[in-house]
Length: 152
Ligand code: HEC
Image (cartoon, rainbow, N blue to C red; front, top):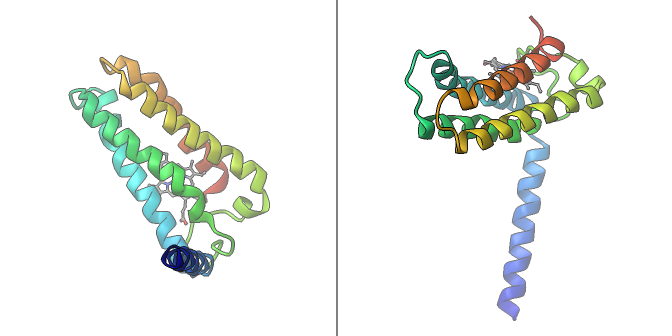
């Protein structure tokens, strides 16, 4: 009983400590993380695009794995826009990300939905035609955000 309570207390304080560390992340670290998230996403979009364009043979397992990684990046992407990370290092993130939070949330939600949908479609895809349309939709979700919230 005593042990369980101790374990619970230690667990809670560890959680609080990491939460605090996260909340206090330096803007330059958030920006570095942000660029990394999108670099990873773009890297995993490449084989998807190559398969869709017929530059690489369609392999359902490879397609699914890469699509899952893009979806995972989409799911963590909101963390990459922590308050205060509008400056602190070179960044192409526009101030509108924070001043138009509702509009930004919309394109972020869309990114998450479209990437998750690509994973779903990829799970049962028998050929590249099964994923072509959803891959294009995901590409549009990238562009929808870049067009409005990333500087040229
Ligand atoms: C919700 C908004 C949003 C979505 C969706 C989005 N991006 Fe971005 N992306 C950004 C912003 C903002 C930056 C600029 C980051 C910075 O400079 O701090 C960026 C930067 C990038 C970069 C440059 C990273 C670097 O090293 O500077 C690449 C590559 C990229 N995005 C690719 C993609 C791809 C591919 C997708 C879709 C799979 C995507 N992005 C979806 C907002 C978005």
